[in-house]
Amino acid sequence: MCRKIQIPKCTITSFYRTFDRLDYNNEEDSEIFVMDVLSKALTRLTDNNFDDGSPIWSPDGSKIAYSSQGDVWIMDANGANKGNLTQTPGATEANPSWSPNGSEMVFDAYPTGGSSFDRDIYRIDTNTRQITRLTFDSETSSSGRSYKPSWSINSDLISFISRRCNPARTICGNDIYLINSQGNDGGRVTNDYGAKDEVALSWSPDGKQLVYQYMISDGRGYSELWVVNADGSNNHKILDVDDVHNPHWGLLKTK
Amino acid sequence: MVDGVVGASAGISAGFGLKTSGDNSEIHGKIAGGLGVSAEVFSHVIASYYKDIFTFDTLLAQGKKSTLPLEKILFERYQNFDGKVYLNKDIYSINPNGSGSTNLTNTSIIL
Image (tube, chains in turn cyan, blue):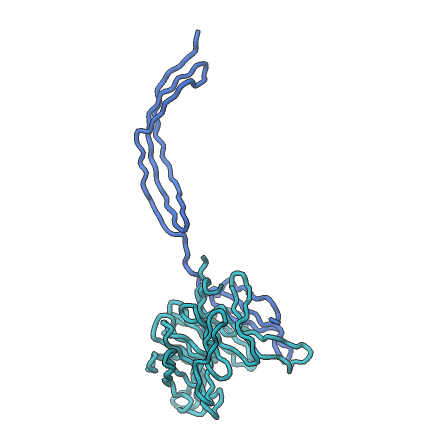
């Protein structure tokens, strides 16, 4: 049903499957659902004892990539034929994003013995499973990392969040950067070294803008939604509430 | 005495028309002219004849019903933090300019 709606990155999310209000420690793992945005009907696609997250449609809407058990998985849009695309022993891979033609994906990963603070961006061929590393920020400084890549729907540009330091290494923080699919520098979108903590992003359908979640650095853990042009201009807040997460920008076809 | 009238008539009409078929729509402009004769007895028409002399129908505009996709930004909102977890997690949609925020799930927890 959601393939007709054509929000390639927006109609799926993960929910907590069950919730025990009397014993918070019994909160179970997250699963992946598809929601028909028009009817608001939900269809459950995964049902296991693992945390399934970061689901994303393939460009043609026939498949969904997601992260689970430390790997990037692919399943049919109806939940059938699940299989792990990445099978790197020990490594933890997550947050996949399809290339415009669906033949490749980017994701973030950290190696055996690392932590989520050691993530970098990788590209994988969905047919051959050949993996190419695109960023090396976890090796350039102790606090460096790059994660949550988002491949533009209509270009070779990949946006991602990276924690990097200023040249004097006196200030480090999250900003939005661009690379192409070969890992070459594509520019810097935000430039505040963490004065604003960008934590999640998504391309606009025309590939000219990005929407991102800005974590307010005041200790409350609140977030806002901002939109910025890919060249860094016209950076502005679009939603004046402070509890928003994981934005996805897509197309809702009305017929 | 019979009160009868026989006369000729002529007329020109013009107008617009909308034709739709499936997703297609057309706007036509039409001009028609004709001549006729009629006979009346005691103000009752006992015979009449009218014939279109010309009809000019032209397609003024055509198009498909708009199927342009709407851009939407979907996001999650976490609300009502009780000190351990958020009791409400919902999916919202919003227009790229920040207007039209809509709760799509409107349920506290999916069980």
